[in-house]
Image 1 (spheres, rainbow, N blue to C red):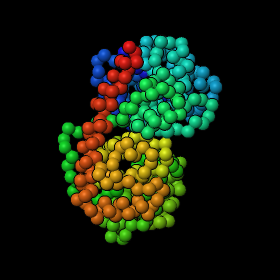
Image 2: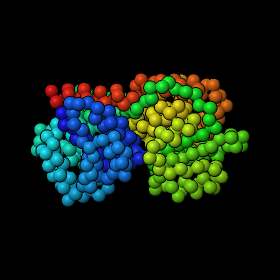
Image 3: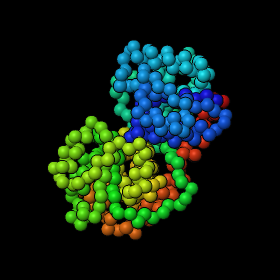
Length: 354
């Protein structure tokens, strides 16, 4: 079985890139399949090549440089690759590459699969859902696809994101308290809510806690100016090639996004695997990931006061926080691990090819 994965760009701070890294790393261990990854831009190519993933850079499938000429070139180049490698399945991970894959499938025998990592509004000229079979990373996305009659229910599978978990059990951290948020610096990611919440914390917590933001993006200047104005003293540590190494030294992970397009954020799972208490906004898909008050804490989107109250509660009640952290760690290890994710993908490929 030969599978070609298509995606827009590979980046260090990107959920889709992290998903592909863990998935392809696991699929590579199966002897009866050959895995290829084609992307338009490869900022984190080193990470993929290090684990021997066959990576091809094809600038024409980069959504940022889309036009009719480049789209046509993308279709032709992907078609040639599929014929050369006898590709059985073309598996896309954004709507632009899904359209390319669908055009290519018309000239080959390849079956198309599209993974939907979030609920994306239908904008632009291209269809946002364009495949023979769909994968939703959580139940909310599946329900959205079916409700909008994008596909028949039988053509939509739910396969949760997964990461590599250590064989060791969770160890309680006796570290200085470090709280971290990590994402691209975009408005919908809610990092301004995180900064404002920190400014509302009492002096004793501010003095005994280190606050961190990892990532980069178009709002970097604005976020740093807000931090300076509010005197929160946040450490901006930039883009991290290995976020999990950073998370191993933190104890609380805040996911402040107020976007309703979120699916199953990889950073939340990585935080859980690294022994962090997760404090998340109430974005639409969070109900499919963790239970408030049992496996983590959830605050109202775009509400710095509510986030501040959850941070105070977590730090004032360390015993409860440890129980929540352990509960979500055990759940994530069972449901959101890369081995399970890869085996479900392989089962789907075999089913649709038969």
